[in-house]
Image (tube, rainbow over all chains, first blue to last red):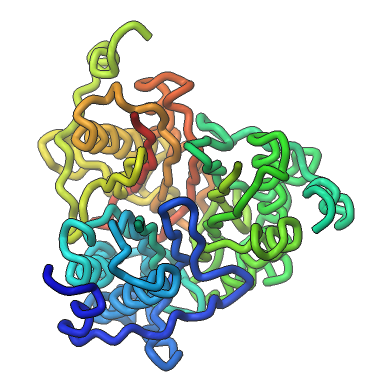
Length: 156
Length: 156
Length: 156
């Protein structure tokens, strides 16, 4: 990896959304020691509109869910940039927690949350971007979104 | 903030419940380094009865859910006090994880979990009490409670 | 405790499954400082087949759910062994996060996740194995499994 993460984002044609203000009385990230804990991110698009309201297994396809999770991932990166100033300070994407709004019959949660996971590996590379995670179902999520993803990120 | 957190609690007219014994074979908190990991707390009232059994979007209003989450928050603070002895040792409420028992149509999870979030800011002030969090739905929670909230708390 | 954890496992007649490859684009564990974050484990059996597909409150009994959670716990221990080489390096099972696939009427999540919790205490003893945790419901889990459990583990 020759350049900085910002250059990588540019190479990938990725524009980060503005770090979203929290939907309620909490903060979008909290730092303890060398860890940034990023609050659960929903699929806010650059400009502030909420994309991807829907339920996997019903009105939403796995591909749409994947895009929703990717957008959550972009918002996570935006929050980390707001927290650290410089994304090159990230030493490890430690963990993602992925929630998927779904029907009781749905079983492809991993394929959906891959939208966020693939993004992390693409942007930060496999060594820094490779993370532990969970991917589970939820009957409903805030504002009706298809996915919510939070993160634990190590920095220097 | 002139006084201690105990004084703040008294000023707010808040009496902490007794730190609840876990409902099963685990411990109510575990410490690693400068972090207390608090187990998921349910709405136990002082005296030990369980309040707030219900489902958001069906038999439970957002206001009732808010009170349920607040009670979870009080139980978190009680566990932190049991863990640290002195609540003035808390340097940061790092993260809350909020689960809301709800119907598939419910979308106001943030307003419900605000019951715990508002409490943390009220008791510890914005700088120490402001936290990252997630707020998601669950089809069912232990004992039928409306909310379960866990916490990551930094101390000195 | 006179022997090593491996000896304890042998005494208990427990054979660890092979550390399962992740179901998607992430890693089964990530280390930050003295903490191993273990990705959500599902009930893979030694040999690689997935056991325990079912829903608590419908086609699955609490006893079956308990066995499912125990199998998740065995997979967590297998991942920790893969991460650290030697299970005697574990200084604390800090936290388990337990998700139970269930109907909206189900309320015995703690009894189900005890399958993982009891295992940790049995294998590592009460002082090291005693952990904080949450136990919540999910409408659906990856591949239709009854339980998914992740872990935060401290080591030296």
